[in-house]
Image (cartoon, rainbow, N blue to C red; front, side, top):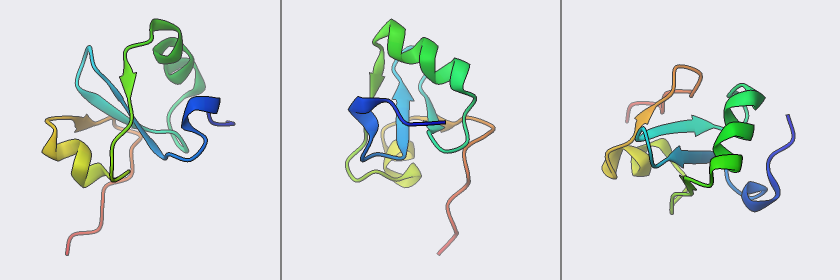
Length: 69
């Protein structure tokens, strides 16, 4: 799947409605298309699952878990 133009330099996008974070490399395209159409998305800085979790977002089942350090 090609990344949405707004997220070409990001890997993770969050859904403000559900507090779920998606990995743009692994999420089903229909989920991302719906999210972009709804306009209820955000990027994280830094672009990591750890930052998403710090903001209260839970990873979607297709998101790759970060390596424990």
